[in-house]
Image: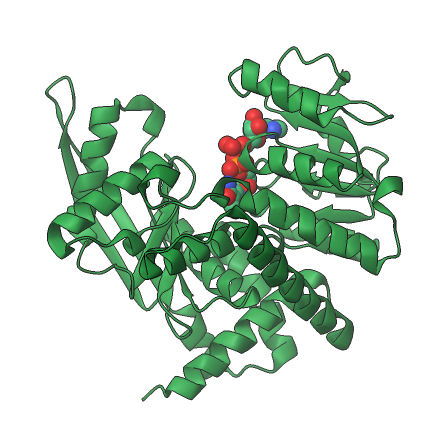
Length: 411
Ligand code: NAD
């Protein structure tokens, strides 16, 4: 099942519970606008190459659309459509005044020089500058793009429309970016994990956590959960997984990765196990924070953690999700668990519009409050309708978008 089919299946499950009629299903599953542009560049070797850039603006019933730009060889229109719709539900679940969008290019950024990447980005913006902007659609980083790319976007957009830092988020902190953006997704995952534990009357001190992925999200999840006194029994990255029953020294692991170009390869603070073994560890909380599709129908039966918090996007395949639900395992879905990132992007946009900086403490306080309220809303919907937290999250999101569409008036 591809990303678009999965999104539609989850949407329809929630829509069934909401009694959403076919006309609204069609409205909410049809993109508002889909743009496809030619992106030509002259490579450093003098060769002309042409790529196709996409921007899908899914829905703006609740406000300007928000979503990343992805540079990855497998980007195609269907994937971008699915990711744009997911952003609509995600921004609605955390109740931001936004809709959803996504964009991208089917390129492998590692195979381009910095000059080539800058040119590609600027050409892409030349093609779409008139369909996005601070009140229309605000891009952000996603796979294969970073704060540097966002700075080029702001600069290129400014050539057409003047100084507009709020046209894009995820910018460098020294260029209208947000202190706290880097940690926000991991912090949000940690907040949600602690809320789940508190709901289930479990103490952090008696909670063993296994985290797959030790990049931007995984490192901050580990940092914040260990600060909350959870025992991080396993961490991992592409080099393998590292297990210590008494708890990994997270500060030592962070120091190690800083000294080894982000890699845990050679880390001796835990016994080396495989990433597959990490998923099946005897622990209370499992946090996939690396790739999509890692929990499958082949390994779902071996998962022992009673709580799975989806820090990565789409780490659980649909069949596996059903198997976990039937076994009574709580899965906190990605559209809630990792929404801290887009929430921090919203703070960046708000501050850019105010030409004012809140500072890190206020960002953290506001993030904690928004994530806490979103968790409560989804938890309550799950209890009321006796559905999984995933279906509950979709129900909360879809209901809010439908209400806004109705209030604004469609005809
Ligand atoms: P990242 O590139 O910083 O880190 C990814 C980590 O996963 C690295 O430690 C890498 O070594 C590891 N990894 C890669 N392949 C692996 C494998 N086969 N097995 C185990 N580990 C593997 O990425 P990130 O920004 O931390 O994002 C992680 C996930 O979270 C992605 O699914 C992303 O879409 C999602 N996400 C990120 C953000 C954000 O703000 N960064 C927001 C929402 C969702």
